[in-house]
Amino acid sequence: MKKNLANIITGSRVICSLMILFFPAFSVWYYALYIYGGLTDVLDGAVARGLKIESEFGDKFDTIADITFSMAVFLRLVDLIIVPTWMITWICAIILIKFSTIIVSLTVLHRFITVHSVLNKICGFYVYFMLFSLGLGIHWQIKFVLVIAACFIATVAAVHEAYCIFIGGPGNIDEAMDRVERMEMILDKLNQLIYEAESEEITDDLISRYKAFQPKVRELERYYSSREWKNDFRMDEQGKFPEYFKMGVLSEDGIYNALDRNKELLETIGR
Image (tube, rainbow, N blue to C red):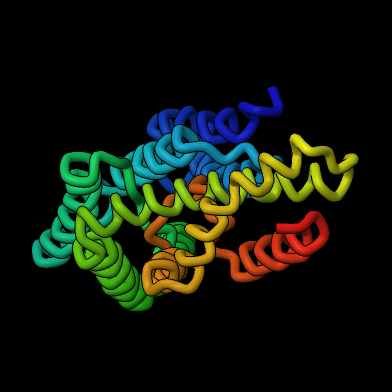
């Protein structure tokens, strides 16, 4: 139950999206379901991170739930709001950009990649509250400005996401994820050996395994001081890696502390 809690919350948002289609827009039940959808969008990620149960499936499921919820709200509002043709074209262009990045990540990168950047989060929050405000007693001119601003922010966010994926390059993103995964395995193994050496009796077998692992440690050292690490670190800051992706090696303190403790232990047990 605990392992699937975040996915259960995400799944309830999909059910909420289907239910919202059966109630008039801006009705009490519409707003209740709309608010619930927004809360679960925040809650599922927080639960996954808090319980350390983030997964590739959860990341994909969350994106599917977001798309389902957005489409359900759009279908509820499309008959009630008069939208100029040029704005419909604008919205379609945003959708096209978003779907293009998904298609590229699946067909070219062979991964389902969504960029969890600050800009995307700002866009999500703004559009959510903008759509909420449409049912309030606000003058139509103010609503029009809010919608224009939403389209503008969504365009910038969509283009930024496409930029991150395309400029990163199919090979670069794929290679970066493989490289980080490989270095993460080395760091995990090193931390395990350090833990054994610090908490257990140092035996000849442990010394032998520890020394045999040092070529891998030197590989980790070279990576930490290389341009590749800096590029991977920058890609992480730009939100190019999925949220579920483990990236302890991109934490400066994580690698530095492990390498420093490794050096001390080598001096203790003798090279």
